[in-house]
Image 1: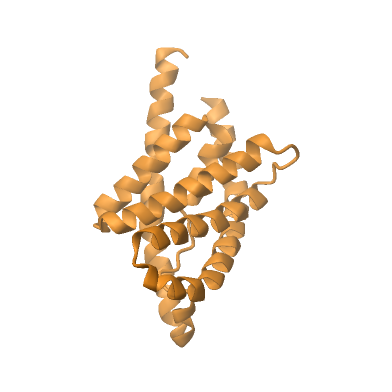
Image 2: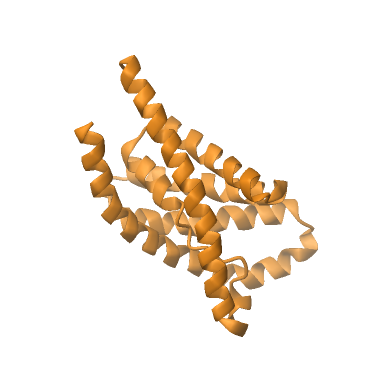
Length: 185
């Protein structure tokens, strides 16, 4: 790769990382506002998030190399944890969910013939993100909390899958424009 192209590529990925952090911040605000409007039903999905930062991850997945995506996910997760002061537990939970989600989406996109549908790939990513987080919670927290994890698991898994569909639909619309801009430069 030509040095100028490599620098440009690095700058674009850095912009995507920053955009992912901004999306994550606003995702927290929007999700909290919606949960506050849900009243007593909100207890079914505490800490619910739409996962808008995954729009950036999907764009990277479909337009950049594996190594660049993993690097971007790690930096975005670390940046969000540092900026929002979320502490080590939230960092571990976010990173475990993000990495399992990415590896699953990468596998679906790259290794299974015919699985190119961004909405399906994103839905599975949302599902795997929750599975990764639940697995990390189970490994980190006291096993006595396993029953609580099981109680919340179905609603978390369903919300992860459904928000993954929403993120996939949004990303499909945005990605066409991103591809056009990347090709024009």
